[in-house]
Length: 200
Length: 372
Image 1: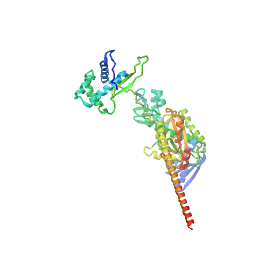
Image 2: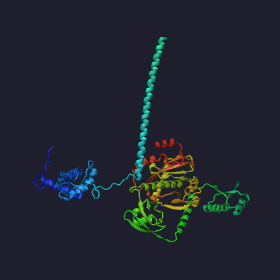
Image 3: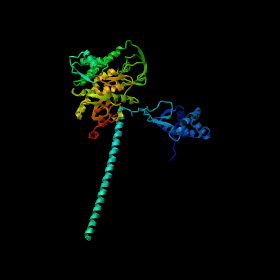
Image 4: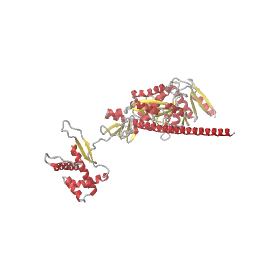
């Protein structure tokens, strides 16, 4: 795979450094505010770096030199280093190796707009109100209870009818076998009889 | 002991004649009351004789010669119910105020209401029309409370409806009310020569798929056709437009047994029901009165679909042969496609064995019918 070529984020000729600077600003803002809104491309790219930063912070702790260097690099505001180790590491410790620490949502396109898809990036467990409204549980509505019980009834009856079918099929087979055996026996008897006839 | 029968026909034996019989012969007296067109008069006669006999510590057998009709019985019960209600209302001489703290939409607030007069429905009238329309039952201090039952003390009030977060309690109330309505349907569906005696309905169980009323329909070998079932259903469906309220009243056991003296099942059940508190809770829907612990839903306007699905023969150990009438209903707030509803109706027409007092009769036959 070819390495990704960074476009100059601060205008032509600025190179990958300017882009990294931009992403650093996004990561810093994410750790500061816990929910940010930006273009899809920026959110998507910054997300991986933020995830990785929290991951190594959980793994290595605040006594590891390389980890501290990374935190120092990605967090432009230095009070956030403290937040990373004291707030986020305890929060995401249980999620380590299980699920992501961040969530990303696509936002509707603005019309007229510049065509850049907007999206929303957040740290899980943030204090803001949830993005998705809580879905009402409709399990106990009268009609749903009735339908659920109907479904159970229907499935159990289906099972019973299937099992009775199988049994009847089996019994048919055994009947056929019995008949075959009987006919064989009769044939052999008749042969015997013939033999006896001949002997006599 | 000897029993002297008295046939009571417009010319009444004098009270002192009866007294003489009791003193001289020391015997019980059997009163046979002939048909009087005036129901009040017959009741008066009976009560006079009962008093005489009770004063003499003598047992009294009363038998009604003529077959009672459901209409007459209903009239009698309504008269007694109205009288008792009026008496209870006249006990409230002074209007006292209570504060009701309402919790829920549109806003939490405190209402000042009348003690023993104001109902949760009155509170809803002060709040919002939506609450009046959709509330099925109220929650007063965490206890289920009828919408038309007067409040008795300072309380916290919430309203429940079919689309609540957890509507299981409301479902139960609805199912109970539907069983009650089944009794209403049975008491007025048949001609006067069939004296319908309602027995009981089991506790509500939505999962069983149908609500039930056990009754003696006075129709021994009756297998209802689909057309007849439709006619029964229509009486229930019509209630939606009539918007009848469930009226609750607590009465003494003696009054209840007077009310239900024509019903052999209920008159047997009343002493058991009243064993703890000595009181019986009655509900009235239009001119139908029945015993139930409650609570019931607020009005019959909540009904959207009401179907009487089947009538099964059952044999009760205690009460003998009975008819188990089953039905299915859906409230106005919840919608179902007719195809789905018909599937549920098919399920509801199978014999509901929940709280069967004895055992079913001819179960195989019912199964065959259900499978058809």
